[in-house]
Structures are given as structure tokens and as C-alpha cells.
Length: 579
Image (cartoon, rainbow, N blue to C red):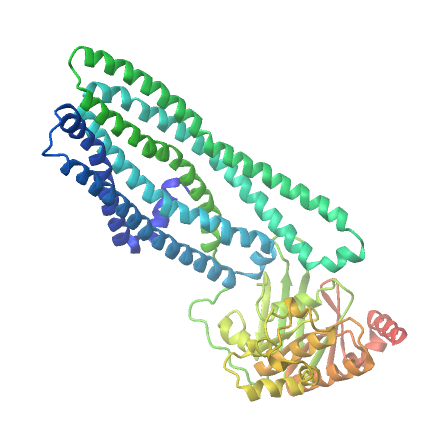
């Protein structure tokens, strides 16, 4: 996107609706410019009438006018800033909301392809840069431009010759701003990249802190962290140096200009072409003009930062999902819950390794089907394709003879529950974690789900029971307790199709028995597709598919596969040895 396209997009989507407030802020900026200019102008009659002519009639009037001018200046500046702060925070909220909404609806492939730490950097740091562009930059552009115009008017009114000399500074300041802005854009992009890397690293450390401790890598990670922080420090240092680089340049230009003005002014006074009162009024206007000129000189830096942030955030907001409803998609109607894979091929990226190769499955409704095979065979991919976490590249998947690709995603996922071995829980109460499946569930329904998953046994022992905060991803719970909460959540959803990835971790016999009973209750009378690890699950399944290298290499019941499938026989023998 070009700079003009970015500005048009930001105006159309985020600032246009606040145009009346922005115009009101510009009005107060106009008052600010007028009052600032009047302060400089009033020095002319003040010196001439009060000090040279020593007029007593204006001894109260002129000081009073100066007080009024400063009061209007202060109030106008305050109101202009308050209005733009309000606009900025509204815009910030809307940009973050749009970005979050896009990420929530985004394809799993997009989320998997980028670390969450980088998305957080986009959501916070980049959006702040956009906010500065749409608030600070807009306000300063109008406030300082109008003030500069007012002060230049006073300067030209007092003496046009001196004004010509002073005005030479503006194009020099503009050239400085342009060159520094380009440099700032590059450095800002680098800083955001380094920040996202640091955020990613910190999230990994917090997530894997036990691993770090058990392998005694505290010193190693401290060294790595220092490298990341030091790299970010150097980049931030560059930004701040570039930002303040305008100051010495402006100071030198101002010094040269003032020296020239004093020299020329002295010549004009000697020739009686300039009065002392005019000179002091001109000098005051010029000194007051220094701040807006300096501000406008650094304005391009803020603009470049905002443009860089926009180029990272807007593509996320504009991301078009591959997984979406087709026009006139139909509501999926379940009767028996039979799932079919017809000649399905799948790869995570085009022209990448093929995960599933023309696979055909017929998973009977209201019965349990087990998927058995070595790690990496494609079992988890099969489960992920049923709720359309990913789209297939070839073939079709049907439920009760209805293509899931012709059905609405909402009606499809409404009928599916997923219980993964990687249990995912929120840093919230037990009650809220269970009710996440159905936010309208009653207290009785939540307790009932906990009871049938045998989670109530440990919940009732907790001091706050269902109101207990379980920590990040349930850190305060054991593995078995987390699994039971996950099952309770699935029970509460009351879905017709259950996708179950059995946990491979060993549990004590009592916990294992309770989880098995909870799963039996969850899957009773439901279409259940399970990635089976427990021997009892495999043997009791109504149908078993043996998956190897993305292909079906065997299917049938347990007894049949022991005879017909060498892979299954080897898998079974290993399970027997483990047990």
C-alpha cells in the first residue's frame, strides 16, 4: 500500500466518523494560533505606548489583553488536546477490535504460521503508532501550522524584510524533517521486528519455565535474554537518536537566523526603517514560531512510524479467510451422524509434503471408530479436517451424506466436540472453564457435567469449589483433573459427534478408571472418532482404521485386523507389552 492509500483507508474506516470532533479541535487550534499571535503583536503597542510614550491610559488595558491572550491560548490548547485524546482512544479501540475480530475468525493456518508474541506486538505497539498518527500528528499538523501562519503574519506586518530572512528557515527545516522521517521509518520497522522477537522469546520462557529449571539453563536463558534485550536497546537507541537529531540542526539554524536578523535589524534601526517596538514584536513572534517549526520538523517522524504500523496491522485486518461459508450454504442436519471421507488428499501448504493421500473412510454414526497408527501417520489431521480447521485440496467429507463444504461452518461445529490430549484451559474459574461450551448453561447443568466427568470429586475439596481460579492453562490442577474438566466441557456441549485424542500420559489406575468412565458417558450413543492409545479403547471400538503414511492400510474389527494387518498386529503386541 502506498502512503496515500494508507491515509485514505485510515480516514475512511476510522477517522471519518469523528470528523466533527476533529473540526472542533481544529477550531480550538485556530483560537490557539490567534491568541499566540496576539501575544507577539501586543508587545509592539506595549513597548511603544507604555515604555517609550509612557502613556498612562493603556497601562491597565495592554497587560489585561496579554492575560486574556494567554488564558485563551491555554484553554484552547487544553480543549484541542482533550478532544483529540478522546478521538485517539476511540480509534485505538476500533483498530484493536477489528484486528482481534480478524484474528478470532482467522484460519488456523494463519495462526499456526506466526508466533502469538508477534500478534501481540501488532495489537499493542503497532496500533499505538497508528493512534499517534491519527491523534498527535493530526493535532500538531493543524495546531502548529495555524500558529506558524499567525506568527508569520505578525512578522510580515512588523517588517517584511526581516520576515524574508526568517522564512528561509522553513524549507531548511522541511528538508531536515523529510530526511529524518525516511530514516525513522526504516529504524521503526526494525524496532517492531525486534520487539516481536523479544515478546515471542518471553512467552516461550514463561511457558517452558519448568523445562528451563530441570535442565538448569537459567544462565543460558539469561544470556539469550540479554542478547535480545540488548539488540532491542540498540534499535530503540537509534530511534531516539534519530528523533532528537532534529534538535541540534534546528538550534544551529535558529542561531544563524537570529544572528542575521539582529545584524539586519541594527542596520534598519540606524536608517530609521525599523522602530524598537516593531523589532521586539517581530522577535517575540519569531521566537514563538520556533516551537511550531520544530514540532512540524519532527512531525514526519511520527507519520512514518504510523505508516509502518499501519502496513503491519491492516493486512491482518484485511486477511481473507480460506475457510468460510460458500454462497447459499445449507444448515447441516444430523440424523445418524455418519462421517465419510471420499478420496481426500491434504497438505498443509501447496506443493508441500502430502499428509493424506486419497484417503477413504466410512465412520459409522452413533458408534466408536478408532484410528490407529504410528506418530505422524495423519490421524490428528483427519480429526482436524472434520470441523474444518483446514480445507482439503482434493475429495470431499460428508456427514449424513451432506458435504461439510456445502454446509455452514456454524451448523457443522455446533454438532462437534473435541477432547484433545493437550488439554486447553483458561486462567479462570472452574465454573467458567466448564461453561465455555455453553455460556447459557445453568448452575445445575454445569454441576451435572462435572459429576458425570467425575470432576466434582476434586472440585468439592477445593476451598472455593467451582469459583476456584485454576491458573494459566490449569497449572494448579493435575493432569487427570485437567482431562476431567475438558470432558465435562464436552459433556455440557451435548454434541452429536465427539472427536477424541486420548492422552498418552500414564495415570494411576483409579484416575484412569474414572476418566474412562467419563469418556464412556460422553461418547454413549454418539458418533465418536478417537485417536486411540489405550488398549481397552481399541478393543471395544466398533470399527478400527489403521493409518500409515497418510493412507488407510487396514480396517475392520480388532480380531480381523490381528489376522489381516501386520502393522496393527505389531501395534497390538507393543500395547500388550506396555500393559
